[in-house]
Each structure stands twice: as structure tokens, then as C-alpha cells.
Image (spheres, rainbow, N blue to C red):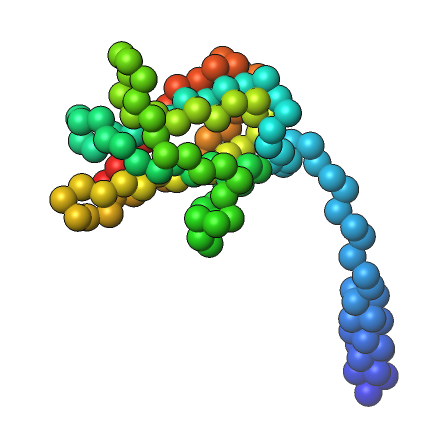
Length: 136
């Protein structure tokens, strides 16, 4: 009987001690997904369907690795433009280092085609960067 009482109080003490408030996590810069404007990086997004270039709408979300719930939550949205010698593309200028979520959408024969990608602009990539999204 004494053993059961000691065991009961030991389990109770462990339960009470384990219910303490967790310490606040310390920020870890390695997990930061910063991004946004105010930097010196430039991104040019080309869109295509199969092997053909295709006009579309391109959306960019700062500091994101996941797709936002809807297109109104993106920070920048542009319709692609065509310049002499270049296919449909959109420019995103003055970006900081960090993660970005890209989304493109266009229509072909009445069908909505989409493309999504997560990119990281880091010190390891050129300050001016081209990326191609293939709409499916």
C-alpha cells in the first residue's frame, strides 16, 4: 500500500511539473522566409504552354512558401507583356532576399491553365533572374 501511495505522488508530481508554461522559442534566422520590396534583385517570369509561349497573369507573394487562399492575397499581380524579341513575361523589381510564391494563370481554348512555384532569392543566385513557368 505504501508503494502505491509513493507511486501515486510521484506520478502526480511529474504531471504537475510537466504542465509548466513552455519557454518562448528564440528566433532562428535560418528559418526566416523574409522577402518583399526594397532589395536589389530582379525577377523576370516567362510563361508558356507546352513549348509555345503564352500570355497569362502572374502573381507574386512575398515571404511565402505556400499558396495563398486566393489571388487577392498576392502582393504583386501583372499581366504578361511582350517586348520585341521576348515572349510573354512579367517583371518583378527591387526584391529582397527571401522566399516567394509564384502563380500564373492563362486560358487556352476556353480551359484555365495554371502554374505554381516556390522560389528562393538568395545571395547564391544572380541579382537578375529569369524563370519559366509552364502552364498546365
